[in-house]
Length: 141
Image (cartoon, rainbow, N blue to C red; front, side, top):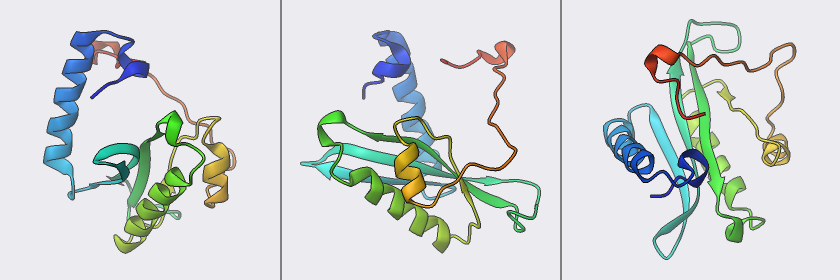
């Protein structure tokens, strides 16, 4: 497994990340984590993850459960073939089957057109913000 954007060639970071991801997926797949992927000869060429998050019930999610789409990716040589669209459609179907009332995601500039085509909109008056907690390692980015 390779993480070129995250680890920038740092083998120790790549190995640690691969181990954490393997454990995470093993513990949570099918239990609040869903993954959709497109394969070419057994190799994942496009994928996305849906994490179920429980929040305080609110008007946009009266049952308190929402989905968050993360890590949408398609390798460059497989882009413009509709794979990311299909992967997202599969996750949206799964979210509906699970009774989720909303799906959130952070759109990159490259992905914004795709997500808009699928019906995602910016939330009026809200802007994603983040603060890394240095005491807890602060993450990789």
